[in-house]
Image (cartoon, rainbow, N blue to C red; front, side, top):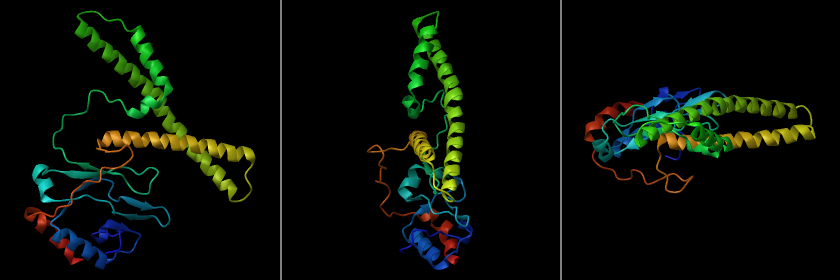
Length: 245
């Protein structure tokens, strides 16, 4: 088709032109390939262009019947946009719901030098009684509470600081449009930019961990996905109405 910004229906675009011909070709491709466009929750539009306030649903999962036979209730979820103009989308394939985990430690927290001290202090002040297994269980609970309090006081506070950094960067860049920046302003912009980039890198680590994505090489997506076109008759009729556009 040559156009990777294609959508399936008119309601998948706002403030941008809907091309009926491209949508028709895309829908035919899905139908002829006997694929299914998974239901998506979260953000309705996965792409946002600030200039003109254009929104589109450009990102989606197309799966074959082999996948659906294993995961009949599979769906996808579009998360909030951050630095990118596209929303990260997550494939939800498992149907089991065991509730929230008792405790989750994000890998990015380990990059904070202060966490090591929090753990050592919590372990040093703990006093336990009873059998060894009960002592160990209570020690883990005590450590969990210490890390949780640290997270609230440190990580959540940092989110507010990042917002302030971004606002200050915007102020400096706005000033550059009307006058030359001072040496101090350029130095400040550089330092804040490094801090924001470092925070974005840690957020990406969190996203990867929360999404439970399988990565063959750190930073490289596992691209071995669904390539075989197989029978999908039980879902085929669901998409036929899209060909009307």
